Structure formats: structure tokens, C-alpha cells
Length: 306
Length: 199
Image (cartoon, rainbow over all chains, first blue to last red; front, side):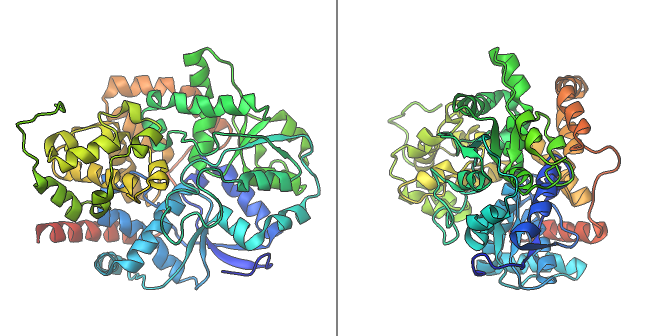
């Protein structure tokens, strides 16, 4: 692991499919703030889908694992540096797949036999990491603080961590090495480093419903309702999250919740990196991508540089 | 049928099969039936049986009931049970693999998850990437034309907001450059899997 706060730390960056769609604003703001905090991101060449949580069912175990194998083979071609992704599902699959492929000889042989069809192979010992873990362990909150030119004074932020960013690798060497499972504080630390106020938010690791919320929203609306209401009760102006699916689910289903429960919620859900871009005095549109939130935060937009 | 049946003998064959064939199944013997998993599950109340009960049913050899239950299909992959299990049972991983096995062995009827997974995989293998628009549309219309239209109309406002925010693009899907290579890799992987399962 690189030394804390080391400038110009280079990573192979895996953006993932949502970076070109529903989470374009995560991608844009991450790419904007990364150089500011000393992260050099080199995009993974011709990356493909990670398989998410349903690829295993749709395509079978080995084909699904081979998706990760192809990405790792491509990363291997780009050097020994760690691979980093800002997407929870990409992290889950690529980190988990990488550790499995490294340890399971039979699986690795199968993946490589398939990869040979495109003259690729993976036999390296790469590390796949989550952007938040890199920021906590390699960069440090002080580095964020040092870049703040435009403190988010008076902005109340509910840090909504969700599930797959911290939990999936519990019980392994790679599980939870940057925060706790039940009460992680890194999002609060990020918000406060940006000059905002982190509110008490006791549902920070509740599930938004994940892909079940996409396929069967009627089964999970009550989960999102609880998250939204806890943020409102805590007096938050915005909910901040690191996860693409959490951001989209909690944002886009508020109308359905209002319709079903007769409520009137309209709380913005932003990515931590959007908060950083605003606090760093960067452009509201180009860097913070605030125009991409379907529920917009007037308070945050008023603070942002136009 | 899950009522206790005193006349029914425990059949350890299924538990052994799970131990040897299901991802994480070798840890199932660690389960001490405390129920932390079921109590921690965000939509456990919508499951036919919570994970605790399902695991006991595996031990009791209730293969049919386990493999046709909606339990695995209700898992949101939140991993709360995994971090809380005092015995280190990888509950989420076991459920995910049981779901896959229930499809492979022909137990699962089409459900929201199998339909969505199919549509998702179509995009992954065709384009190398997930096209959220097409995955959703294919999923909606997998229920038939009428239901597809209903779901599409229900979500029209969301789609409009996403397009307006630039988070849903119009035009061709994003794709990998080496589509041919990716497709050859996935085809080969499916062949290998077929070969290995036959041996």
C-alpha cells in the first residue's frame, strides 16, 4: 500500500457501466477531484461489465467470472499498480473475483482457457480496491481538508454508506479494513473535511433494496422510505452516498414513495465526490455535475462556483 | 409444506450435496440456529423461510421445499447477515449459489430475478457492457406486451428525468471495442462450464 498522502499515486481506474449512464455524475466528479487529492487515474483499457449481482444467474459461474478475468487481464497489461473503482458492485465483483481467481487453481485455469480466445491471460497478483478505502487509507482526510477553498458551511449532510461498499468481505483479510461494518464514519469524515455538518444518521448502512428495488420496487419501497425519512428527521439538506445504485434508488423512488404513503419527500441524494468538487471550488456543472441530480439541492448549488 | 413431520426421517444426502456443491456450503455446519441472519434481513419477512429456517430445512433434507422457495430470490445482497453471523457462515454467498443451482437443476420457475438476470446477461454478452435502458426494457417486456407497456408507462417520469439529466443517453448502446473477442471469451467459458459439469 502506498504511503499516506503520497502525491501522484497512480491507479488503474475501472469506471463500470453505470459511469456511462445513471451514475455519470459520480464518474465526472471523481475524475475532477482525483488529481486534486493526488490520485492519478489511468482508465482501464476497453473495460467490460463486472457482472453485478445477477450475472451469475444470467450467464453461469464461469462466464460471469470470466468477465472479471478479462478486466484483470487488461489491468495486468497496464502495470502493477492497484486497480480502483468507485462503484460498489464493480468493487464487489472485481475484488471478490480477483481473490477467487488468485486462490482457486481450477477456476484460474478455466478463466485463462476462455481468455486465450482473445489472446489474454491473468496470472498476476493485482489488488482491487474501493475508491473510498483508497481515500481513507492512502490519501487521508487531511488531504481533502487542505484542498477546500469553498467550505460547505451550514450544509447538513446525512452520510448514507449502504451495503456493498463496506460489508461484502467481512471475515476476510480485505474486509472492513477502513471502517466498521455497523457504524462506518468515513462519509461523515469526508463531509466534515469539506466544511459541512454531518448529521446523526442511524440508518447509514441500511439496504436500499439493491437490484431487487430495480426489478420489484413494490417489495422495497418501505426500505427507501425509512432512509429518506431518517435523513429528513435528522434535518439533513442532502443525503451523501458512495454507491451508484443507492444514489439512483433513493433518488428516483421518492415520487413512488410519496404516492404510496401520501408523503411529500424531495431530498437530494448526491455523491461524496460531488460535495468535494463544490468544496474544492470547482465548476458546478463540469466538475460537480450537480445538474445531473434529478432532485436538485438549491442550497448546495448556491454554494457552488458557476 | 414445512409443518413438522415426525414420520419424516432426516435425509443427510441433501446437506452433504450442499456442503460439496454450493459456494460457502462447507460452512453450513457451523450454523447454530441463532437467527441473527433472519432478524437482520431487510426483506426477510417477505421470504418463504428466513435463512435460519432454510438452513435447518437443508439439514432435514427438504430439498424440494428449499430449492423451490423464494428465499434465495429475495436476497438483496446487503451482506448484513454475513457481517453479523457469530459463526462465520457466509449466508449471502450460500443463498446466491443456491439460487443459481435451483435454475441449473430446473427447480426455479421464471421470477423477477431470473427474468432480470436473463435480460442483464443479454446486454453483457452482446455489448460487453450494461445498457440500463435496454436491460430494463427487455425485463419489462419479458412479462408480455401489455405488462411491458404498463411498467414502461409507470416509469415514464423517471425515464424523462434521467434523459433530461443526461443520465440516460439516446442512441446506440455503449460497448467494448473488442466485441468479437469478448463474445468469443464468453462462448468459450460457457463451453468449459458445460464440459466440467458433464465430467
